[in-house]
Image (cartoon, rainbow, N blue to C red; front, side):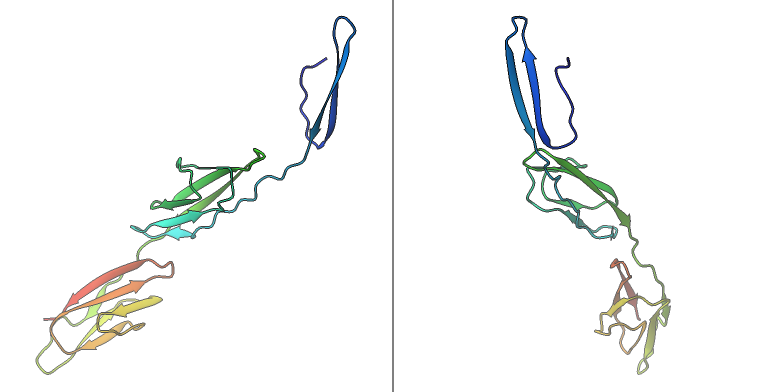
Length: 173
């Protein structure tokens, strides 16, 4: 007695129609199980201030829609937060996935040691803490302090565990 039915499993469905004159017609529909698209966002766990990160999915979908409105398989982001993507396969099945990109912070440090050097002597420049990555303009790497023997600006680039960087300059006069 209904003009439509909803089905939730594969099979052959049949409808029989009889009109006012007793004429009968039978229609069949075959419903197949079609797998939803397999979807996984590849992304970094977080983003450093001022950096750009890329979220990426496979390219084999009929349509792609990110929560930002983008429709390409990759999405460049500069702001942490939750990003969602919905994809549709050629059978018109939809799958959605999301990822939460954390806000990483740049490393913070202070210089310790000398700011003035006397002729013929050396000065020590040090950081007040250690980091997984430390690179001095002198070429020294991985150490928190250096000995210098000339008046100039010494630079250091430090990298924390998340990969965020901060550069500092210590002038020795």
